Length: 241
Image (cartoon, rainbow, N blue to C red; front, top):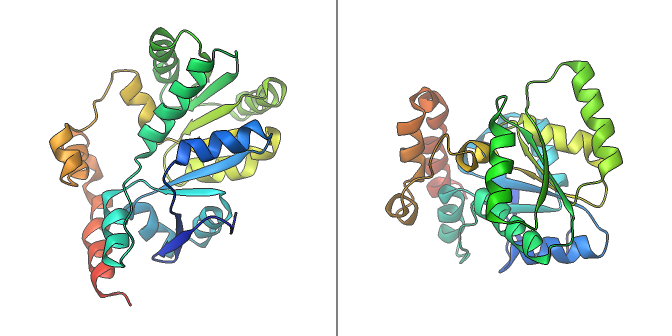
């Protein structure tokens, strides 16, 4: 991990504190230096307490951003003034900035159900004609995944967004990032579903009042067991020294 960046621990996991996360990543990219970005939320922080492999993967990332409202509130309770940086917004900012340069740098979307990543890529290319996006869904056989890795090594995309869910996407990036050492690798969770128009982000009121998790639970009620991590996280935020 880059120790030069200001950071603060959230339940033992580092969060980097910057004013311009996309700018920092693109600056490194222009210098030929790659980055692994982890988008930390309360659920992931709680999981990392029990999963040492995930904790190690988070600690090794060059950039850990405050994706979740719970993480931001935790930091504010500790006296750190920081704005939330949702992973989907970071990803969109990177896409816009790369698309505006129109320099034919390749972007790669990997993950989601069959048809989702390609639909997300098509929608982005309609928005930004300067973007060149290749895509692959996340339901691959062992042979197909080997072929994917070979393609990544040959293509050397500038941005690689991986939507396999936590913690699988974090592990996959950590294992394979050496294939494209100059790329920006970001675990984007369910962003492809949103970009493809299958799901929608929470309305602004929910986001502004730290209730985006509630809207997500409304869309995906099967997540209720995983959401039990949120009240436990809140208790730790208040009482953990």
